Length: 228
Ligand code: NI
Image: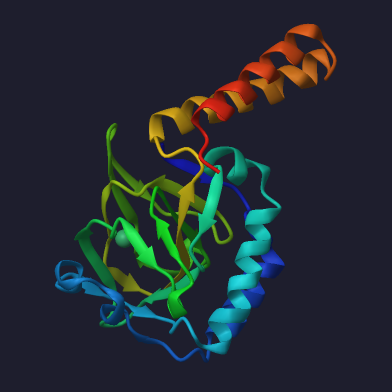
């Protein structure tokens, strides 16, 4: 499932993030890529231990906590610490690759299976050319370039790339989610059901017997499929 989340970060949060990234200690992104991805990865990244990364990470995590849509779609069990990247100048692209199936967290703090990938766009799309996230989905090739503060969730299993940025700079946050529900297909069913239920509640109210029954069915499916 490929999902667009509007305004995961507010305009003021985006402004704060961009402000902090102006003088950030960027490093070559290749440093954290495996041997195959390193061949095609030409961008810059914030070192995970930098003060800027640590402070901005909290900002992104707060946005995730406040997003019911994110929870409904990702059903997160573990979230890898959000990282930050920059595409500009000569370091402006990341060719086709697959993300490693497991992220090892710094300082031996565990592992995250990368069921879902997330990118939060931080630059105004009119301020740069190129830089589309291109995801080879089961429904074909998707080209994604969102408003600053918007996020996209896409399956960790997909082959994807970031097109060369030919003008301006593209700043983003990226991270992975290990879901309580491992299967993309099951997560999609639960998400759809949850969204339809929310719409029905606005028409019928919380206590309509059919709403209560279907809410039970949602939770029973989640109970059957969730690994907590
Ligand atoms: Ni990737």
